Length: 75
Length: 244
Image (cartoon, rainbow over the protein chains, first blue to last red):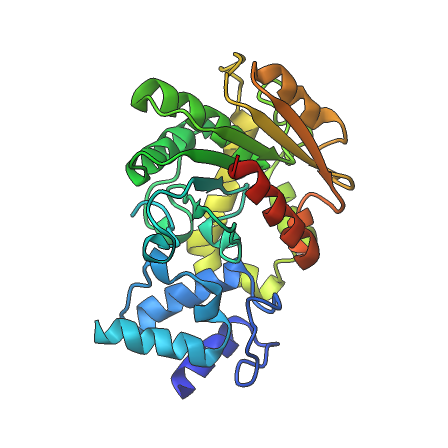
């Protein structure tokens, strides 16, 4: 989780990724940020995020992103 | 990779009408990730070299983007009714995709909804016809609110910026080759405060269909749906358009 938080903060430093739970819904991150997050997850965790996972609920919090990474790594 | 599919087959059933969304210049399928039109299978498309297809070649023209999009649409359908929605540049790509769908695949949409987009004869008009790459960079900074840090990031420079610059290049190079009239009904949306598409000009689309034409206005600027409340109104409006 710490590694993920570091990645997220590097992409958007002015967002409190540790506590925010509506990152997409409240427009704290936009589609460009999500794209950067997907690219970083691909590089750092060696996972491909499929189109079917591109849902606001999977990007609304660091925990949700972490859960998605875990799920994709287990597949 | 094909479309960025929100796979709701299991949740909502295979036979629901499908609404394909064509991204605007500088946009990707992810631009529509928060959109959900009840009662439909909502499928944002992805142009080559953009978003989830960032490692693929970029389209060389609006028509090439349309041909590729038509292929994605045709592959995604298995007999369902479908509609096309395109915002700004996406409206023109949708127009050409519609022609490919009819000619190459024998597929006819129920309706085409174009948003903040001049018709093919008048496009691009002022519709984001930014004259140079420098204009595009200013647009990204001032209108799209892309921060300096984001613009300087390696991913943005290597993978995102080329696709954005290419979008505006193919807009600048676009010449209308399909002045014809289609039978598909067209709904044109305008935003009251759009500084790129002059109020009233979207009604030119009326001349492009022999079917029903409808004009709808929303408050706000070129990206009127950035406002959460207006997006809700738009999605309800689209639901009414699709479920006919």
